Image (cartoon, rainbow over all chains, first blue to last red; front, side):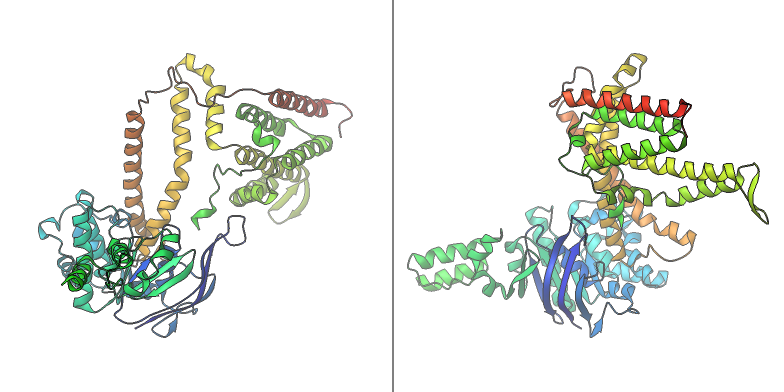
Length: 281
Length: 269
């Protein structure tokens, strides 16, 4: 179970005056069970890249291999790929349409050709998996709060039991509490199922705490790829790209410059606290 | 796929045509359309073609852009031409079974097709060189006389400009919704008619919900800035005629006169 992206380029409106190169020779390998954060500012190409992974966009150049199969082969089952590589888009409003939340979650499994009974079972499983309160199962999805809509949308994709889950800005428009809840939910799901999860975001702070691998994309090219610690060492370069490292990185660097022998590579507040205490005591 | 829609598309360029007052452009497009229906004979045809070519040249818009607008009506054109060709009564020029082509029919078909193509090119020339906002401004100003008869000109033109403004936004939104549903295994491309219509529901419901939400947000934002309709409303950029606009008026009228003269002149071919 792995995704290999080989020399992929993508151009919007090729051959016209509006031609824009969104991806520029991307090479990437995504292994089984990884928890990846994909970071880039608006317009960096991150959304374009993930839409290649389930075949919604087709690369202008290059190949993508999923589990050893080239997805651009003529007879490749793209419909099947989309249920394998589940993708939750940024705005839940773009996918919720049924009369009740429950029916909406059943939409994916039904498209997979499952019977109504199986779809119902999947929907129960998915909704309880994302911690959706069961008194709202029969509510209209349009009457939900932002956080609940997001949960319903994630459940709608999880119900198809994808092996890879991609979430595009799952925390956009949520308050800090809702954001933490969703991110923790995603981490828990990852730990429970061992699936590959790709979290797309423009905020380092959100993602750094959770993922094991960070990929930074800028101007259609991959700039950094490594553990959060490794990536944040380049915090000055990240700034040039319009991104910023977590605030603790800045703090630790300041402390280090001021003569305190701390480890500057810590990524979270609690790690920083321990590090400072260790040096002080 | 949806990006190909070009309704009301504006092509930014720096040309004389782009700088003209929208009212002049509306007027001359109107004159041009009239001329298409009164011209007759080869001389008129040559004159109109030449004039159109000159204006296209002046606009600095690539010709391929105008052709793109034609692509969508090719089928319509074909049907019109074939009907004209086959159904016009008269002395048959050519007969094979039930297919009977008359001289008048052939003439009509050719003329009709040319008229339609010229019509589309001419009017897309206007929309390509005028921003939608300028266009509705011009329309509002030109039709403001109708206010006296109780026609809400300002409201109608405001509605038009808002509608035009939202076309690209809604197209983009449709694209996103389609992708979100395709990611859940929705299939918009295969199946019979009933299945296809049914598959539109997951697309249309979110689209309508979002359109209504946008409309109410916009209404709220407008009211918050004290919008209350056209009465006593001033403009940031009022439409003002320049010398070139008057020249354009004169040229349009002269053009019409020449077309009329060519039609009724006894030497016309």
